[in-house]
Amino acid sequence: MNLTASATASPKATGHRRWAVLVALCLGLFPVGLDNTALHIAVPVLSGDLGADSTQVLWILDCYSLVMAAVLVPAGSLADRFGHKRCLLAGLAVFALGSAIASASGSVGVLIAARAAMGVGGAFVLPASLALLRQVFHVRKERVFAVGAWTAVGSVGSALGPTVGGTLVQHSWWGAVFLVNVPTLAVACTAVAWLVPRHRGTAPAPVDVAGAVLVALSLFALVYTIKEAARSGPSVTDCAAGMLAAGGLYAFVRRQLRHPHPLLDVALFRDRAFTVAVMCVLLAVIGVSGLEVLFAQYFQYVLELGPQEAGLRMMPLALATMAGSLAGGFVVGRLGVPAALRAGLAVATLACAPLLMAGEADRPVLFLLCFLGLGLGFQVAVNVASETALSAVPAERAGGAASIDATAFEVGTALGVAIPGVIAGAVYAAVIDSTTGVAAGLRDRARPSMAAAREAARQLPAADGAILRQAAHHAFVAGLRAVTVLSLGLLVLCLVLSCLRRPSRS
Image 1 (cartoon, rainbow, N blue to C red):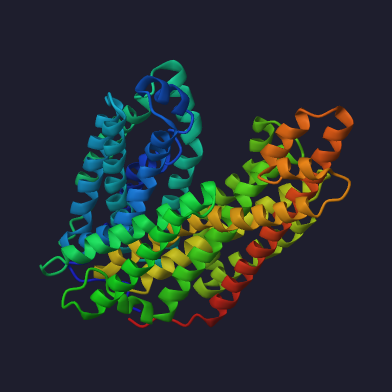
Image 2: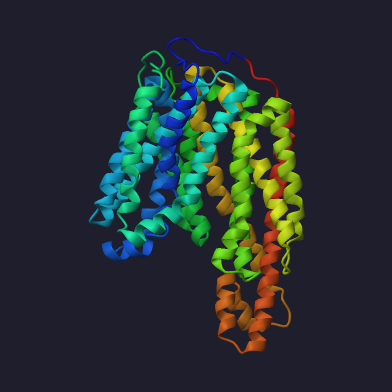
């Protein structure tokens, strides 16, 4: 495999400059991660000021990630074609402009449009900056570390989002949540323009505009379907959107196979190393995201911990994930790429299995050790897989590969909320229905969710309420164990796939 590139396709950053480039790229990524979660705490104040109803609030929150997921694939292809540095600067500028408009929004419509613009900007930032890492860091061990550091910055941004958002809302106004991005992005733009070597892109070719629109609409419909089905259960509208997404993606692939200048080179998937890497990212993210969501609820619903203590219980998973982001380069240096991928997946699998012991009694040491192992192994594996996907393609196609990897992560995160949520909900309802010793009317009230069961229990006499809570706890744990089995199976499948991986061709 050729890890170098031509003068037009591979910018060079020698000496310490490549590390300065990494800092510049991470600085541009941080606001993109921050805005995934920064608005959550600001919703009550924001909706009151703008008069947003519940549906509008959901669009304010979701349009950012929906648009970003939809635009990632065409953004990566355009970055390959017109230059990664140029598209990165354009993405940062659009993100900054959207943030400024959002901070001054006086209506719900303007805010939603501004959030959508931020999603477009973020969609250009992700693949362009990741592709530049592929081209600037030629030593594979350094590149794995750089990708890990880049990933860690995005994770830290998402993790700090609620804290930063809450602090700004409390001491300023909700618009500050967006305005804080502008100076950060201004510094990032200056650093990127000054430090990042020029990348001219491939030879000019007609842009497949119809293909870009088709894949963007299809991915938007796909992620929308997943989010809505997870939020309120499948509906006729969700099924229609899902069918539209499937048909659109099929038509897009057919179009790319026949088009003389395809937006996305579908032939990338003929490389086994690339395909296995992307599949490992998708499946591992689905498995771990589902566990993260349900265990956060388990600590509050079953163990009856407060929100702050539940957050502290989940902290080892977040910290281990950040550590895994930085440890990937070391592991690759010691074991090599194939063994590092398998080692990460093996550690995550072994850490996931004991979580089947989660029950109605607290096991703090078990959870601590399992979360540490799961986060560390998962992130090492995902980082190595992402770097493998980038290295499996020529440098001039790194943007397209990066966009596919980022799309796999985004779709995996959405599926990681939807699929485990549906499974846990179905198991919970089935166990509630089969519970003896609880009146049929109470079972009906408890069936929709754990929150409904807790509310019903509060309205009952103490003895009856305790019985209903106990039944709901038992049902929730059954659903949690079913999801843990699913996550364990997905990690094992990733491990099997990694053993099928062969070295990619140049």
